Image (tube, rainbow, N blue to C red; front, top):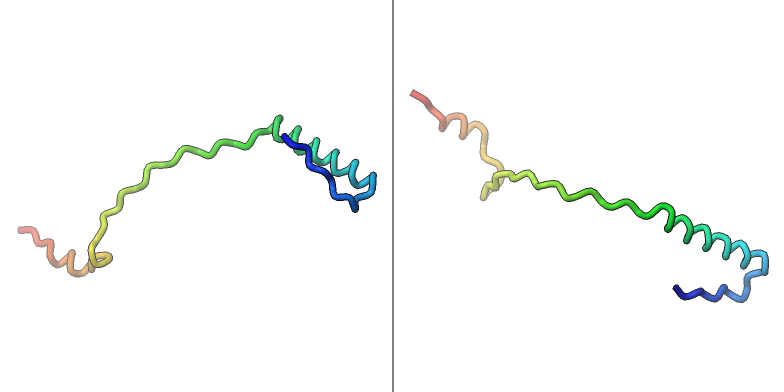
Length: 66
């Protein structure tokens, strides 16, 4: 990894603080790696209707038993 050069307008105290923060961030990434995302869930297959959802009244009238 390349060490970035701090901006010249920072005071020595600010540079030291910046280096401490960088070290802390690097240590944190080593100790606590990012969690892996959960595996993808299978998609629920829904029936596709060509003209939107069917009319419930029509489907109920169309089903006659007898």
